[in-house]
Amino acid sequence: MHISSNKLNGTGWRRIAKATQCSFQGFKAAWLFESAFRQELVLCALLLPCSLILKQSAFHWLALIISLLFLLFAEMINSALEALADSVSLEHHPLIGRAKDMGSSGVFIAMVIALLVWGEALWRYML
Image (cartoon, rainbow, N blue to C red; front, side, top):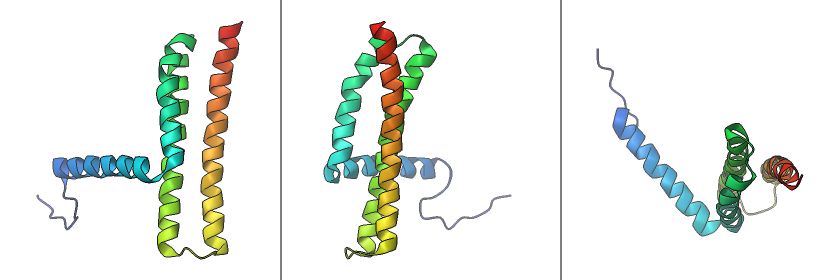
């Protein structure tokens, strides 16, 4: 039985292709409009080869990489939240301010996680 769908992005492989296209547009927008994302992406690109030196095991290497990806993820979500909030109003509003602060806190948590994971790897490497 075939069920029709009115989804704008289609179904099946077309939906996957459209979602992939939207994802790349999101990366492009983050690169063009978000300096924090650019800075963090460059940092991740610099740290990625270092992970091969610092890793103690395959799982350890995975933790190093995941901590970097999580930082980029948090920044992307924060940037999306800020763009959405700014599209609603550029004037100060307590709830919009709270949402932006909470998004920023999410990025801070991701940075702390990355610092802990990478700090531990550096500590082990130095011993």
